[in-house]
Length: 137
Image (cartoon, rainbow, N blue to C red; front, top):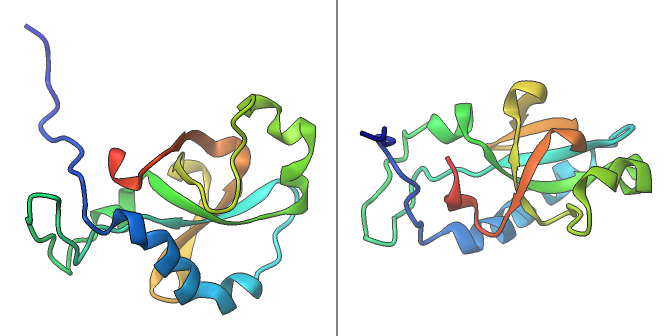
């Protein structure tokens, strides 16, 4: 008998627009942060207050994504991120600002940026580049 996960990824209606909303909301804050080395600035994907594709409402008080979520948007990258050495591990598909990624949250520094949960960490802590943030949780 095979083991199954108790939950699964649920397509969200707002996931396509959330990146643009994040950039609009945090433009001044993002511009005020200077990163070093191969660090990048990530914003956690947050499903709170949105609807699933099946019209299930995720409560505003839902905090799991903020605390444990793995999907993050890259909003800024330090100059050191763009070297061939830093990007070598990614092969042909290199991460860039605006990409949704799966981030090793245990190896990054988390903090509040505006009303969002942000993380700083080396781009080496990116585990995958994903097409939609609702693919993982």
